[in-house]
Image (cartoon, rainbow, N blue to C red):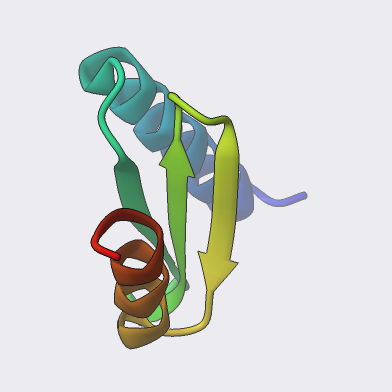
Length: 71
């Protein structure tokens, strides 16, 4: 693993840690980006139920949230 990939992985884990520390019981939503800054995937995690999901687009993620929380 080169230094650049190591830094990207470190940034990703730091982002997950900060989200986890700040969120408490709120729905957590974040995205991952490639090295160019293009969003590659969207993630959601509900600490109250333990459910999580990964999506290829923001629209797919929003549909999942609507179905789960705004029936």
